Each structure stands twice: as structure tokens, then as C-alpha cells.
Length: 387
Ligand SMILES: CSC[C@H]1O[C@H](OP(=O)(O)O)[C@H](O)[C@@H]1O
Image (cartoon, rainbow, N blue to C red; front, side):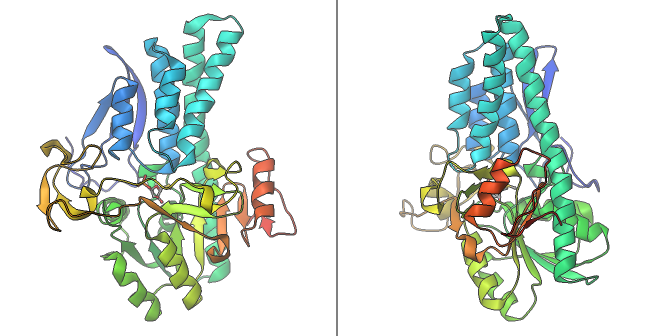
């Protein structure tokens, strides 16, 4: 167990291993960070589904990669691949990437079976597709980071920036350097990060625990803040731009992201601050017409009403993250705990993907984004451009 104190830019959040005792998906248990770097070895799909539900592995792009490797793991074990893909796809409902990754690898596996090449060859193909998905995400991060940095430079040429972010969108949620936090890292590397404001991100503290962990390792100047303190920073003129990730982007440009994102978008609009979403095209879901159609995951109330310890203590409620904790409310108090909220497109200044920057974010622009194959760049009257 390595303590989280080495100065490293990014730590691989997940890998697939063919071990002497069999294949496994090995992941950095994010419920144990920042205090401990503990690896979780998932040797079967039920174990991986449990890790996804407990947020030991989390974040839309990484969930897609985990879903893909999970199907490859089932194929390597000779398990029922269709059943495994279904369980993985349904492990968390909001991040579209999870189902995309699982189904894409399942389709690769099935194609080899249909060709009559047998289960062993199909299992090899499944792992190849999962690894391709992983590589593509890392490449997408690099392109998003370039487009995002150029966009910020357009907003404030040559200036140092005070950026605010919510939840965690760095190396811990992608196959590469991250989405929104990946852009922040690039601003920092360019010597242009004046300050990073890190929303703690209640109730699971992804900001305080994970973004602060990544920011510390990158040597950034930052402050953690209570989510409710963000408004006073906008009022004081202390925020030059907001950068967040996404879990699902509907066909009309509505953005589902960690709960607390929508209020930031309203604050940014009120104060004339750019509100920028950074997400790979695999987060875009043309099959969901609008934000109203996005299923928002409802999580156990105990995550709100208890301050929990390490998950090893044993969660109070099925599915809740963390172990037995301290009551922050009367025991058994009812709680409302949506994991995400939805921001309408009119509050999004720009959507940065690996294919370019969409500004403004409109249904037409989203449709065009989905119609181009990966890597192509499209330019259109609705502001789709490659920055
Ligand atoms: C770059 S996607 C990260 C995205 O995922 C987080 O949700 P969770 O921690 O519940 O997996 C959050 O919405 C982040 O913006």
C-alpha cells in the first residue's frame, strides 16, 4: 500500500491483467483516497459491478473503460457474456459511457462468434476491443485538453486564470490526463493557473478527496471550498471560468453531471463567467432527446445523513459508500440524494470534445457531433469548430 505522497502527475486508475491465477480488472479504490492508495482486484463481473456501484471506480469515461474490460473479463472466464454486459450496463444508470463500453465490447465478441471462430478467438477479440477503447479515451483526453486550453486562451489571452471545478474529472476518471481537470493541468503546466477553486462536492466529497489529491500531486495552487461557498467567489469576481465534466449529454445539448453542477451554471450565467463542459463524444447520447429523458441516479440517503468512515467498516445501507459513520442528522432521517443534476444547453458557454469546441451548444451541433466519425473535424454554422 503506497501512501499518496509521491509527486506524480497521474496514476493509472484501472488496468486489465492476465495474472497467474487468472484474468482480473485491477483498479485504484477511489473510496480509500486520499489517505490510502489501495488496489482492488476484480476477478469476476459481480465484483466489478460492486466496485462500480460503490464508486471504487467512477467517472463517466472510466466507467466506459471498466465496462469494456468487464465484458472482456467475462469472455476470458467463459462466463455468459451477454448477461455480464447487461449487468455492467445497468450498474449505474446515468453515465452513458458505461453501457457504451460494455455493449461495444460485447458486439466485438459476438461478431467473432457469428463468424464461427469459436469462444477463445472471441475472447481475444473482446480484450482487443476493450484495450482499443482505453487507448481511444487516452487520445481523446489529449485532444480535449488541447481544445480546452485554446478556448480558455481565447477567453483570456495570455492571462493567468482562476478556475473553479466541481467533482473530479482528472486521471482518476479517464484513460488519460482527464477531461475538465485535464485542461486545468495544462493551464498549470503553461504557468497560467493563478488559482484552482475545488468544490468539495457533497455528499461523497469527490472534489475534496480526489481533485485535491490530483491537484496536490500536480503541484497546483488550490483551495477546497464548501459547495455552498462558490456563490461568494463569483460575487467577489474571483472566478474566471468554470470547468466541469459530464456523465450524459442529451441530443438537445442538456448536460447531466454531478449534483451541484446546475447551480454553478446559473451562478456563471448571472455573473457573466464562461461555463465550460469538457467531455468525450462517448458521453454524448443522441438516443436521449432532452435533459428530461436522462435517468438521474438516486443514491442511499445515508450518504447524506452520515459522515462515513472507510468502506471496510461496512456500509449502513445497501449500496451506500463508506462504512458505519457519524450521524449528521437524526438517525433514519429521510434524505434526498440525487447523484447528478441536469444543466440546460443555454447555460453552457461551450462544450469541449476531442472533435472540437461546440459553441453555442445546440441540438443541431450535437447532431453533427454524433454524425461525424471519431477523429474527423466538422465546421458548421452553429459554431462547431476546431479550436
Ligand atoms: C469526466 S466524468 C466525471 C464525472 O463523473 C462523476 O460522477 P461520479 O463521481 O458519481 O462517477 C461526476 O459527475 C464527474 O463530472
